[in-house]
Amino acid sequence: MGTGTASAPTVPDLSGSIADRIDLIEGAFVVPPAKGLGNRSVQRSGVLTPDGALVENSVTWRGMAQVTMAPAMPEGDIADLPGTWMFLGPLFGHFGHFLVESISRIWAYGALKDRIDGVLYVPKFQNRPGHVMNVYRPFLQALGVDCEMRNIEDPTRVERLYVPGQGFGMFQMIEGAPEFRDFVRAHAGKGIAPQGAEKIYVSRSALPPVRGSILGEALLEERLKAEGYEVFHPQKHSHAEQIAAYRAARQVIAVDCSPLHLLALVGHADQKVAVIARRDGHLDDIFARQIRAFQGAEATAIDLLRRNWIEEHASGPSRTSWGEIDFAELGRRLNAAGLIAGGLDWPDLTDAQIAAEVARISDGVGVPFRPWAGPPGTAPVEEE
Image 1: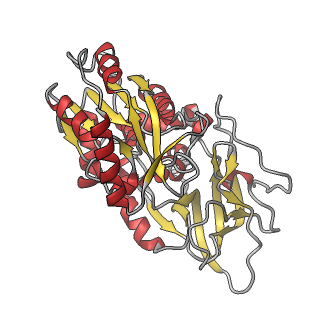
Image 2: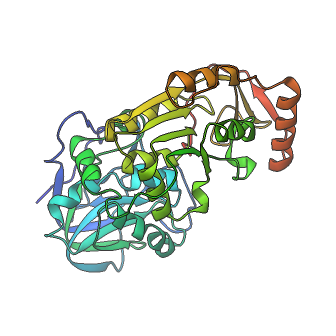
């Protein structure tokens, strides 16, 4: 039986095997975030031993920071769940964070599936936990987790609970542990047939302006259409359709965005991918690292940011900011990467085009946007 810890949790090291990082707790307490607290960046939730010690493997990390902290021992009437289950951590409603942090423990399912009755999540925060579980249940099945799934909204005493350590995550954990990569390669998307264009541009142009992108994205789309690319809007397709499209594509271009996590999970080694930075923070490189590590595909990170345009009240680039990029150099980089045949004479955006884009975005969001003059390299708070 595994034990908890009273010492400070340590950041997971995924550079080698994590096969032994699975605790089995008899009478474990699964503690979700308290109701009524809203969507906080850090929540007190996780797994406790019968004597109230935190099970360190239940901590979820984002880079070097904890997303979950040790909860208090629950009091009062506690629900009991008989049987043997596996803990998967916090279930995010946000697709990008789900694709990184909510699947980070599925690597252990292959070894445990014949020993467990199902898998358990806790909500990232208490907002329609049953609905969020229903949204992602088919997707988890497509990734290879085919069993009963529950999102626990009240503290629960579980008869037997396996708690795997985190095997994947943002920033320094983006390549994943060997066991996580092996599970993904063996299972993710394998039941869905490839279907779609050979060349796709993963677009953000149909999203609300508050979601951020690059200035002149519509112009980029027109130039890529002339190169034979289909403009693909992931949010207009089911998860299965997205997987089918990414399995079919041989050339993919995108600004840095959450769907690239899915491409890394279900793509293939014969793909060429370009990831264009749309805001400061080196996320283009993080996505490219994941794609290379998971599938062995040829992934090129392209950071040609001249300026970040941010909301007037914002302190720096984030998931809502817009990037002003060097279009002429972008064409040359895509050509050099073998993703387009032309691109050597792409004109840059004019000052008038930039001003029109900023005005359009400001009107759409309802607040003025301004250029950010801060130091380069600041990572965004949110990754979407």
